[in-house]
Image 1 (tube, rainbow, N blue to C red):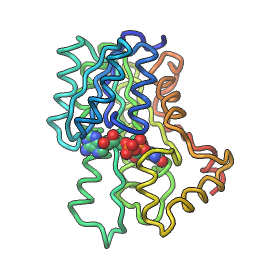
Image 2 (spheres, protein in one colour):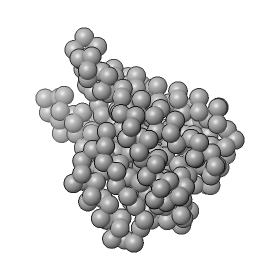
Image 3 (cartoon, helix red, strand yellow):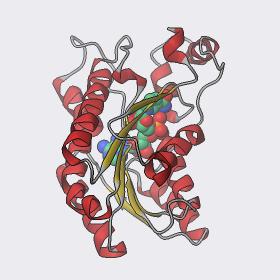
Length: 252
Ligand SMILES: NC(=O)c1ccc[n+]([C@@H]2O[C@H](COP(=O)([O-])OP(=O)(O)OC[C@H]3O[C@@H](n4cnc5c(N)ncnc54)[C@H](O)[C@@H]3O)[C@@H](O)[C@H]2O)c1
């Protein structure tokens, strides 16, 4: 158990990669404060964790707002007495070219994907420092490579990676800060993205076939990397943005 008794906050942990990261962290002995927007889904994940005798708490709320991030940190400290790290995972697509996307949708995408990362880091850092802990951002290969109709998504993920590097610089040697940059992973988000195509299933299959490893990532693939980055096994890593993408970045 390489995360035994360490306390982490995971945002967007009610589905996809966030849920998988939560389950994998718990298997490794972590104590969790999980967040998401949907009460029902959040309580379902919480029940799995508590049913396996894990210590966990679900805090519902929109991480695009500063207050919920402050609350997440407060809950971790009040309930579990310490904070060892955060995994900023919540994210949305916010599709639409610059001329098509509304100002509200642009701001909402940046609030969810990027400002939330700043807010949570700001409230968490004074406490993570005490444990010499970690900050992990779930960014995307979209930080490095642009996709048609994804300007808000790509720009917000690039900003996330920049903030990871900045915080690695400013808070070393007391906090390690790294970004996970997944390629296409089989979660609800990728299927939402595919809806932009006439034939979504075919579009996803085409992506799969053009990937050297010929498959989508699984949420578990990403959770394994998150565990590694949260643990002492990655003790010489900070400021890294790691692509985990079945090789798609070398094939396109
Ligand atoms: N699926 C992919 O192919 C892929 C690839 C690269 C990066 N990512 C990133 O991985 C992260 C997880 O996405 P996923 O693919 O697991 O999709 P997902 O839709 O299953 O998960 C996203 C989670 O974020 C939550 N969320 C969204 N807005 C929120 C808000 N304002 N406040 C709190 N929670 C909020 C959702 O409820 C959901 O639980 C996202 O940041 C996404 O951008 C996904």
